[in-house]
Image (cartoon, rainbow, N blue to C red; front, side):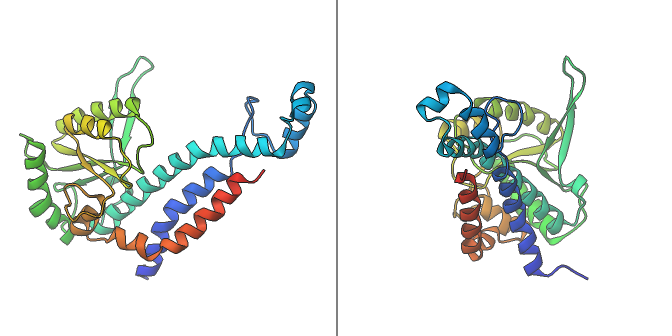
Length: 264
């Protein structure tokens, strides 16, 4: 039986919610190298004379550590969910298997070959004919080539997906600069997909100067600049509508998750 639109929407939303829930459940370690429960924390800090004297054995301190550890993990896991969601849309709209919806290559390192996997791809030579592929090939790909000033005749695009950038993440950007060169060797266009609009201009410029097309989470109707416009106009799935229609559900679920993070 074919999947209904409602079931598909629920599956898409769960890519995000399940990822964030996983981050919220992880306890802090307090330098022990293993997860520490609140009861173990009370013994660990309560038996330490100095910490007990000054009040660091408080459940509030445990909650602060738990929240601090969770915040980075929450953003990272949200990014994982965005990656899974983007690839699911490619699979569903273009009719390909998961292995065909992502892109990988191997680089030599001092410790031996290392595989790099990017979050999504659309390829006019490998993908079966579909309305989405026709829109991509006829409308988006020539315009993206022109915008990037590419001299290759591109066969498709390779996507690196982020939920957003919360810092000047130069290390990650450097890795993606390397990826861009390899993607071009495969005659594809490097495309950065950011679900939020949170990316420092310095980082965005660095990607652009390295040959990446940068799509941001804006409500603009330009599929060469907006993640949501690309999803709607090219892939044929209204991702902005999915979030708008389910905003209250998403907000309620995130409130529950954050309350769990802040609880000792």
